[in-house]
Image 1: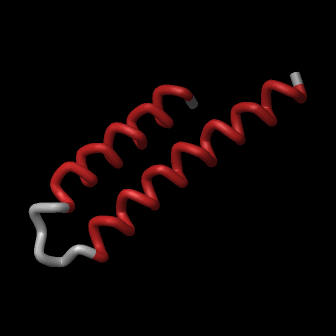
Image 2: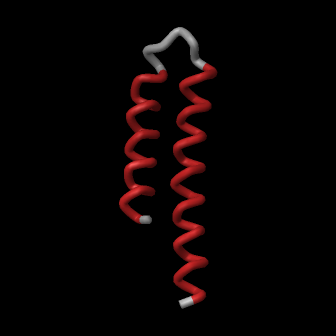
Amino acid sequence: MNTMACRAVAQAGLVAGTASLDEERAFPLLLVAGWLTTAADLMLEQGLLDSLA
């Protein structure tokens, strides 16, 4: 799970870095939010799974 979360954060960083270069500013920022939400969800899920074990 941590590897997937790290990849999601890396993808958000990549999209954020290029978001300022695009003329369509709203959509790239939504992608950043989506990738960061994915990373947060993965970490929360892992925490819940660890607490059950």
